[in-house]
Image (cartoon, rainbow, N blue to C red):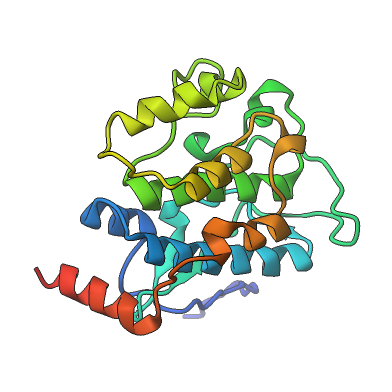
Length: 225
């Protein structure tokens, strides 16, 4: 009796184990994260986006579910299955591929069909920062039918923020946070803040940022309750 086998090459990707799950589950578990931890995590995700950008890669599906939490409660970007390349020297190039998760998509993808891939990641980051800070999303989807995003589209930012302020205690939102999110989630791509300016923004650059020890103390203390 003889047996015949067909051989073919396969690609296997080994990734670092992230025992603490997804950022989304962490936010859900803790309701919201302290400001110093939000700043630490924002810097980590920004650094990952910058690294991808310098290699001409746009993720295009950044979301809290694709941010993993390692053993030390630091963040790791995962799932680049929808990523694409762009001109990293000139930061140019458009795509019309409808990919990603609707609640994190840039508005121009639905309105015009053409978008700059690297801009998607910064828009998604703005949504994630909002979620870490508040425990909920700024809107359901970035389209004109959404009751929250339509206020952004109409430049009615005061109404947008008043609606969110009404669900939180007084002075919950800092002026620096409001300014950053407003700049990151603008309707028009040319009005949005660029990655270097996000790094330099007062909300990200200034004020207390959680150290590794402070991060562990908070996470381990809350997870053991």
